[in-house]
Figure (cartoon, rainbow, N blue to C red):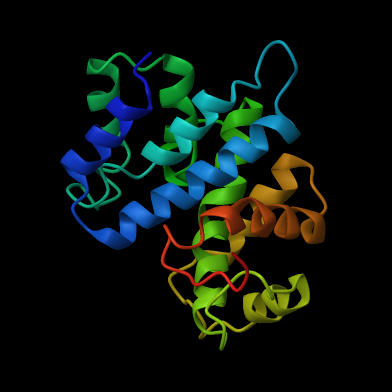
Length: 194
């Protein structure tokens, strides 16, 4: 399987926008943390693989944004670049309209973190600190109810993803906030502690 440098090169080849690259980094970090928490020991907890799934889940979106193209185009590209069927299926499953079941812990974790990562970054960006350091779960839940806030984020996908993962919503939101904190600068936030 290709390594992280290969994956980053592929992401940059297809994704020129800084925002989508930052989102890829956020989901990569969340997925690496999820591998330790939700992976099946000895079978399904490869932290590097989970991270790469997070990094590449939307790599084709900028060039192929329609539902007819994304993530189908990306899946074909990944297949040609040596990524495993399991890896590709996890990415296909993050888009509900593909009909690909999320039948592995890795696929369920990707679905449960993708939209949530974007939402958490949006929550942090409107805080005076522009940081995750003082972001509380209660604030996130309040913003989730505000349909005008970050309206492009699919709240149903967040809810469904957490349910499919079998996680407690408050715990999962806190877990993902904590997973993103170490790379706040890289994803456009301002950490309050160094």
